[in-house]
Amino acid sequence: MEKITINLLPPEVNLAQKQGQKFYKIRVLSIAVMVILTFLSSTVFALRILQSQNLTLAREKFEQAQGKVSELKDQEAKLQVLKSRVTNIRQIKSNPSKQSQLFNLISAIIPPSIIVNSFGADRAGNVNLSAITADYLSLDLFLRDLVDPQINEGKIGAVDIENLSRGRDGVYRTNLKIK
Amino acid sequence: MNILPLINFYQKYKLIVFPLLVAFSSVILIVFVIFPQIKNYLLDNKTILNLSQGSYLLEVKAQDLSGFDQDELSKKVSLSLLSLPVDKELPQIIGALQNIVLKNGFTLVSFQVAILPQTAQAVPDFTTKLELSGPSALMPQLLSGIEDSVRVMKVSGIEITTARASGVSQVSLSVDIFYAPLPSSLGDLDAPLPKLTEKDEEFLTNLEVNFPSQAVAAQPSFVSKGKVNPFE
Image 1 (spheres, helix red, strand yellow):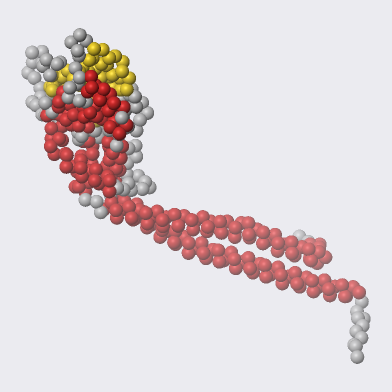
Image 2 (cartoon, chains in turn red, green; image 1 turned 180 degrees about the vertical axis):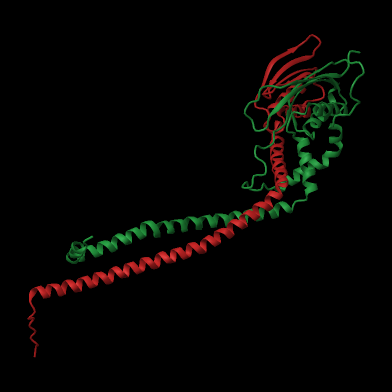
């Protein structure tokens, strides 16, 4: 059997009761928020205090390490100088003189019957060679060797015969431009 | 001061005023206390991390540096500075070139230095022009003597004219001599420690092996200084 409930209180009391309940809820919620925020603030403060101690320790340790390195500053400077020198020297040595290389190459392949009157290698690596020979075949062989990539090791790109003449004495005179 | 109207106002609107006051206090607490503290906490955490990393790197650096033999390092630095000096060191160059020329059977006729305006290049240089005379058969040795010299130099031009009758060659050589100023910053605490690679060590050993015979000769000879009458 269902119970029948009848509210006999006046409506303004009812309203006041409802408002009271609502206010109670708001108060509880507000207090909870304030408590949480206060707890959070205290926690953050506590963490900051701990952190400041760690920060001081870390700073001290860093300063100690800096001191140690400062004591060895001379060593470090020497090492830097050494490294920069070695790097620079190795860089220079890794590009040997093209002029010397061409001189050595031509000296190595020139037949004995060819006499070089003059040899000139300019800054750009262009070579002017003036030579004489009584043996045309040697000259021919020399010219072939100069342009052969397997023999010239890729150091010679082109050979221009600027002048080739044969005198009454039977001697061939030639001027070559080697690039 | 009559606070009764205020109490009445609060009683009437307490459902709005109370939460508003709490919200305002919360915002104040968050904006002026919690947020700045958390922000500073995170920043300081980063600082601690950086300091710890810095300390570790500095400790390692100090350990590495103390591991070097000081005498050996000084010796290598002197050697490298002799090979690639900070300045032109002309007296040393004249001595070194003269020695190389004589050693390879040539005679030094004249010596000229051309210091041209520097172009932008990693290692600065200046050019010396040597007029020599000697047997052309010894040219390869002369060239390798220059290229392999302790002082870093490179042949940049060759002119050879041979007199057929005498077999003596007149040689004009252009030689680029290198030097390099010191690095602008030396011994910076934050700079990482340069490492010498195996190839660097090998190169230094080779340099050291060639050092005694050439370097002694490369040093300028010391003669008595001064003259009683400079016009004589």
